[in-house]
Length: 201
Image 1 (tube, rainbow, N blue to C red):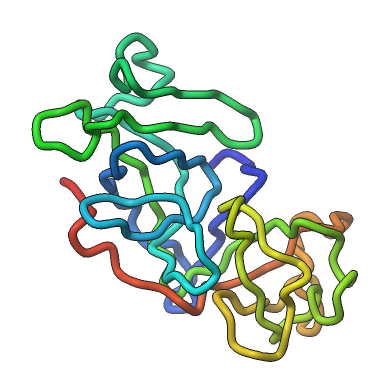
Image 2 (spheres, helix red, strand yellow):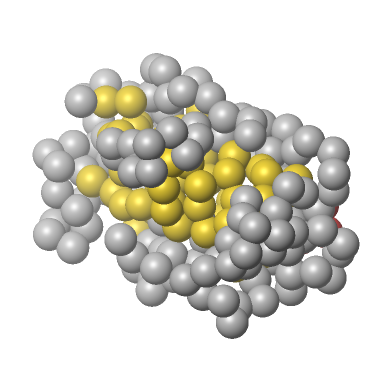
């Protein structure tokens, strides 16, 4: 899995392994990126845009209606009104205006369901700037304009979208695979929903 700037799914607290990746239809005219958290939006998924929204999962890739990735089919991958941008930090896809319509371009996101999954998340400011943003057991929300970042200043003991999880130690949430980072913390979504109605075969 690419080392996204945003959420990097690591394991499930249920059995230690990640759940199966699901192919989920992207709602029309939505911009989402690898490493971003997504929510259900009618017939399809879109980027997380509210601190009180439920999280369906984390995007780890994209496929067209035939199961090809952008790297295998760059020409005509996403339709004339769509845009695909490659980046080492996570590719971004702006879906076409009719992406979720039957028989259309139908680009899907490859999504790791969020329920019970612990991720390495990326803070939008240095950890511990706000009390608790580096401590397991504290809660934190997403940045509503940047779906792959956690809002460092929202750290609190009040239940929010994510709970910070043990990382380098039982007390510290710092990502044990990136202990020198001042931004990466282990977290688990608390406000989740199953992807009913958006998963495709």
